[in-house]
Amino acid sequence: MNWTDKITVTNEDNMELMARYPDNFFDLAIVDPPYGLGTKTTDGGSKKNSQTKFMNDIRRTNWDNSIPSKEYFNELKRVSKEQIIWGGNYMAQNIGNTKCILIWDKMTYIPTMSQFEFAFCSMNKHPQMIKINSNDANRQHPTQKPVALYKWLLDKYAKEGDKILDTHLGSGSIAIACHDYSFELTACELDKEYYDASFKRFKTVTAQTKLFVS
Image: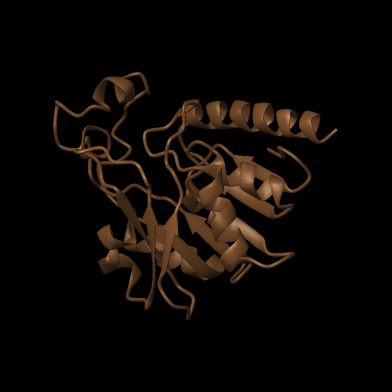
């Protein structure tokens, strides 16, 4: 479905999406796949987690029970020239090694939640530390990342005219970032409820932006 003339998002399996594209079609894939942590993703391994009640208001499924297969990463590398993969430290056996590790400092201290997240970056660049606050009052996905984080990645690792791929849309933050920066994005989300919620969020945020600019 075309959300705009440059943002195309489908409700489908990512392997089906990637199968339609030739080798190296996308310039950069920025993906946030499941880390294989199960309920630790939202509970931090503790029922006393200060975020548990908040997270229980978000629909919980078994989406984070396992990491993607080796076949998924092979296909991701086939269709994209470069990749940024969040949670790469949990799936190194399927991705491989890199010298360019990205470390996101969430700048928010929650005792039972990780203050940092790591991403694999395929580019031949130095490791980078990213300091962006993770607080979001309108969170609609357990692992929702800030729009500002995706804008930072696009600023540093994408260039004008690049085609961007995301195989795990989630809350749709990357779609908002690509829209604001006029990048062409192709993405998919398997879960219909998350897909619908991200579409609604995208339309609401972009409409507000347009109104503000006008």
